[in-house]
Image (cartoon, rainbow, N blue to C red; front, side, top):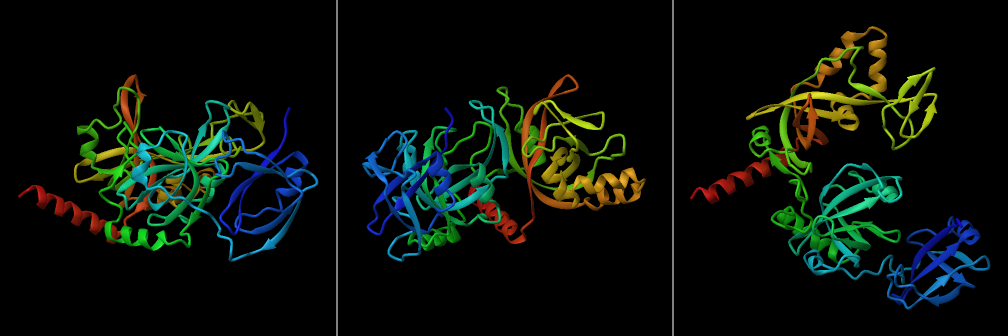
Length: 409
């Protein structure tokens, strides 16, 4: 039958680690009490041999806290570390079998936007975020965060150059070697450990470049996106993979103009208001029907689908910007744009579109095979937009010049 389960990993002043698990009523009672990084006293628990299939801590036993167990907040104790790590270098992960649980410390060299996927096993909507981590073993690996952890660790909390320590990541064979969180994984940002300054100095000296990527993508993506030009899209046949896999790349280009829109064809669609769904709804009898959720709603939300023309030194390219990226381009959510059309203020509507013109960005792009008017073509869409960092761009160009000098002599 259905039940509730809650587990915590405990660390004492001697460096010993043990897992404590609570069920049903005990889980409800103790879940609000435990806080990560705080110290507690625990009594009246029950010891039993640890199930090593699910419990990867080194202790041979595990605690069960039933309804009689007592847990009291103690506060802070400098004798007890926040985490007990046994770090592996990234280059050593390529020799480890899948399902290995390990600790890792490294520098964030790329962070992807949140993505929504549907679990093939449970059919539930999941939120994920992929982060590329590098270290001074001159290797990188992709680390995937799920749900609450994915939402918490965003670009503001862990920008590129941040040192992260990961406790209890699981090795997978996805795209070579990659890491994923488990229920018991923990991530510390810029942790107070000896490795922090060493990795910061390494990243300042190297910017995390010239590393070997353990996570390889047959679709053209390996860790951080490679910079391409519009000419490369055609020459390299990006997005035209026979197996349908996507190509990911960065494009430095100038937004020339947004496609002309009007009330009949606005740059948005009516979407399901349920968090994480975003599917198109049909309006019927003042209700909005979502076929995916199999539910009628009294309201809906608007989500952008904006076509933009961008250009670089090689040519021009139409690209599709979805909601988050389109909102970044226009500076207004779709809900603020709709009244401009409904109230007949098309001049202001057009002004907002024109204001976005002639701005240069680094566009994160995804190219994927798509059927357009009975013909298979590559559809280019945005995954992120980054404003030009002139200092970083100068470093990039100097590296390109140095590479040209190296191979031209």
